[in-house]
Image (cartoon, rainbow, N blue to C red; front, side, top):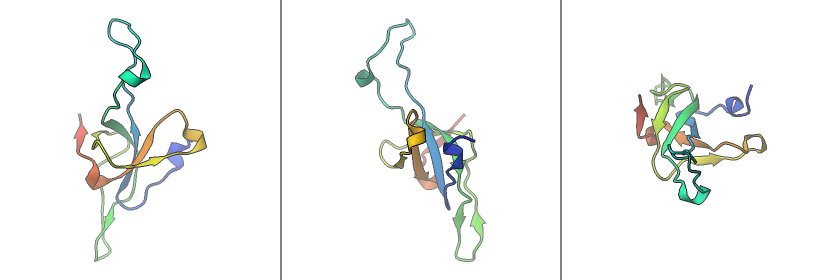
Amino acid sequence: MSAAKRIIPLLDRVLIERVKAETKTATGILLPEKAVEKLNEGVVVSVGPGTVTEDGKTIPTGLAEGDRVLLPSYGGNPIKLETLKDKEYLLYRAEEILAKLK
């Protein structure tokens, strides 16, 4: 089990792995890291159970593991663990995620 899979979000939170932009153009030219923009796209790694109402009922989120989502430019809590050095993970509330991509 990967370290990211062991992180289980609470309530309506969603763990997202940010998609990295290509560092190589279609013609094979390598781009420097500073020239590559961060994409506002990610993949859902894990999802919390959902929001709990005043009645005690759980309303599940509309996302599932593996969904590609559109992220806001700002926001989300970065997750930094020693075992997750090579990838960028963010924790968002389900309501902060802008859209699901097909």
